[in-house]
Image (cartoon, rainbow, N blue to C red; front, side):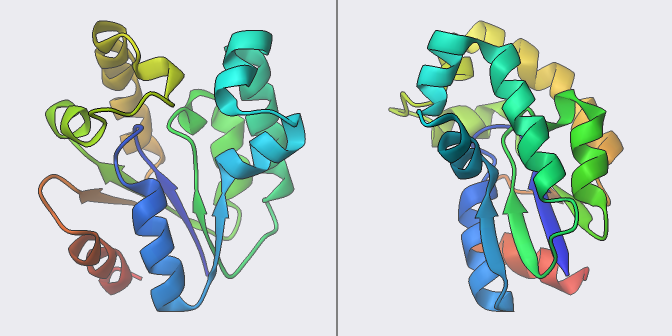
Length: 162
């Protein structure tokens, strides 16, 4: 079993991924952690020093490296859908689950979070959010609305669909 969690930043991919991995006795893979390890620097530094294009290239390399991975929950970065090849690599023997959250809910969840370079400007973040929503929906095998739901409720919704 391979479950791939997609969604905008703050949608709950990491938190839900941790719960699912523990509950289903699967390995949790955080793509952002693998990108950080590969680059030898934080995501913020990658964006600031090398730019978003370099980050996306690293993201594609990591996606490809996970293509044949099984028995895991993969928590992706919010922009994974910006390059369809990433989804194609990850989807191999896996199920793509879109954790759908409203922009209002994401704003609430990210209050005080300074680690997300693309959320610094709320107006531009909203534009990115709007563009990505359709892409998330097109890629997803399962869409789970996360607004005002507990991690447990979201996770059990996912488990019941698998």
